[in-house]
Image 1: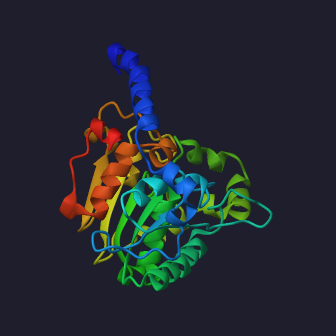
Image 2: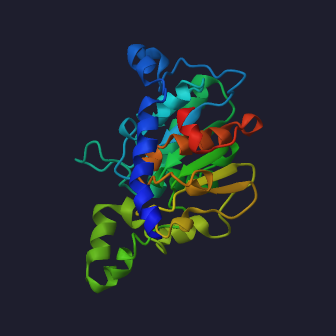
Image 3: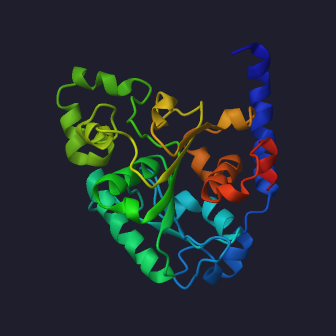
Length: 286
C-alpha cells in the first residue's frame, strides 16, 4: 500500500463512521414502538415489498445483536423483517452458530416455514452475515429451500470455507486440535476450507436453479480468507466487492454486517433490483 493511502485510511474510517452515526436508520422509531420493529409476526408484506426478509446471523452471533443496525434499516424501508437463533450449544448462551451446520440449516427450514405462514407469502428473501450467508445454501440445496426463497444475499459469507489467514493450515501440526474443534464446536470445523461439509456443500456447483444470489465481500476481511472465497459461480450470481462501490469503505468482517450502510444499500438493491439505485460512498446517508 502506498504511503498516502495509509494516511487516508484513518480519515476514511472517521468520515464513514461519523456519517453512519448521523444517518437515519429507524432505530429510534423501533425503540419507541416495538410493534413496528422486526420479528413483528403481525406484519403483512406490502405490494412494494411483497416478500418478508429473514436475517441469518453469523458465528458467535445471535438474532438480536447481529442485526441492531440492519433490521431497523430494512423496517424503515417498509420490509417485514425476521431473525432467528440457530446453532446453539448446550450451556452456551448468547453465542450461537456453533452447532453442526447441517442441523442449523434444519432450524432455518422450520423458521422460514413459520415466517411464510405468518405473512401469507409464497417466498422469502434471506440476508445472512458470515456463516449466515453460507449456511442457507445448504437449506436451498438439500432441504427444499429453493422453492421458498427468491434471493440470498451474503455479507462476507464463507461460501468456500476459510483458512483464517492461514492458521487452519497449522492444525495438522498440533495433534488432536482438529478433533477437539470438531467435537466442541462442530460449526467452526464445518467452516474450515476443505472440510467434509464444505466439499458436500459445493460439490456439483455453488447454486441451485430459481434463486438469485448476491455476495458482498470486503477486501479487508480478516476472517473469510482469502476474501474471494466468498464468491459464488453459477447463473443468477452477482459478486460485489465493497471497495469497488466505495474506495473509502474500510469495513472488515464484523462491521460489514453490523454498521456498514454501504453494504446494506447494496443488499436492498439485491432485494428489489427493479428499483435499484447506484451504491456509492454517499449511500451511507441514505
